[in-house]
Length: 147
Image (tube, rainbow, N blue to C red; front, side):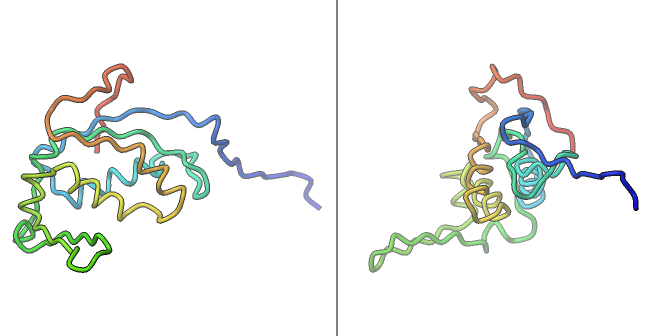
């Protein structure tokens, strides 16, 4: 009988080392960028990844107003919201969203790629999106994320 014991190390949520990354979205494609952001928020880029623990890092996205869609999605893609009241359904195209609320375009895409649980909501809180090139997180010393 083999007496060696192989144990899988599971990360402790209190001991997770979180980094801050800044991503420049200038000229990036929305879907391809959001998959990379969701990957970092979940912590899949780390060897200590576990599905039941939030080991992901913080992500700051700047220049969200300069993102782009491929093909004719900028005119065809429709974002739908519903207030719950009769006649409360609102539809907005991607072109209108990029002008009015560019941060919500990337937030909507990333949120759909995260788990629909308490853990997914905690991961989403680590995402900060800004339309311009400035952000108020200089104190955290964010590093540029290289794809």
